[in-house]
Image 1 (spheres, rainbow, N blue to C red):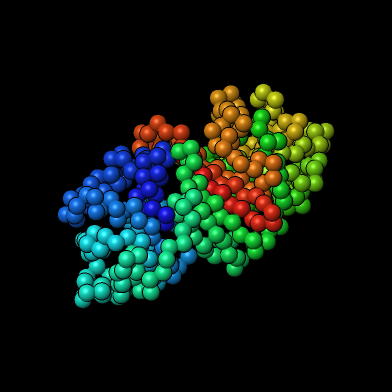
Image 2: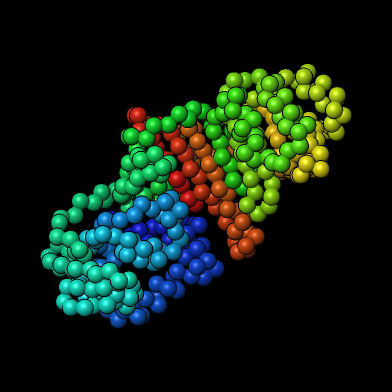
Length: 388
């Protein structure tokens, strides 16, 4: 960690999502910070110098992406401490360290240079370079371009090594993972080919799909199906007029809505004949026409929406879809689309739109989202996560 205070300041007081969490409406971390400053009873200048120091945690466990996004900065630091085999703190503010380690983290000072926290002993060496827990003193080797850097393993459970870099850019938290030994069979797609589409849903997951994987993909999301509907899905598979295509599965986090978007045309003559033979209810919404694809007795009603270039399966009824098409912006006009780095060569793109969730649960008016891009650069596999 390049600078303890800078990491807190740039993330928790700059990025809108974390600034909200930091506020009294969220977790109230600002109050906790003030409480700690009163509890510690140390000189303000000494405290600030300690907080401006660099820290290296040698963790004994791998952290997930969710762990790194932990909104409680103080709990995250505590977990780093107790999960570390050794720690290097590049500060000579020894008194401040003692007060924080004992009064904030709850350690016991057994003797000079020996502390105990959660049944774990910490041998502490203090010299002119800093404070070293369970390790011999070493010089700092920290990349000052980033707030936080490190390495981890097994993001995809494939025994791969990853380096990561965390910074704040334009009020957006950016986490970049990079691996040169992760092999992927995912196909590259161009996100900009969807830029004029209206994609509704509070989570979007976008990738490339081969035609022969269509049924298994559909089957992951839309169950239960009666036998007739299952046969109908196989029929749809047969009349898709592309061998591979971009797919989007989108869901609600404040509702039960589900939508599967396929960027491929269907054989119009065959689908119309199919629908006529089964007497499927039909209607129109703008450039789409739709059929009620399944019946109520097989679970949620599923609708099939069809245009010249794509088709959609969804449990969202036509009246509401009509509202979405008329009110939601096209993909290219969304705030999260505008910050995508590699639109033309993506393995995967994921969006978690938190705007409605924060409004419903915290009455917050906040355009907030988390996006994840996966793409190749110079034979390296890159995962870039942005939170705003």
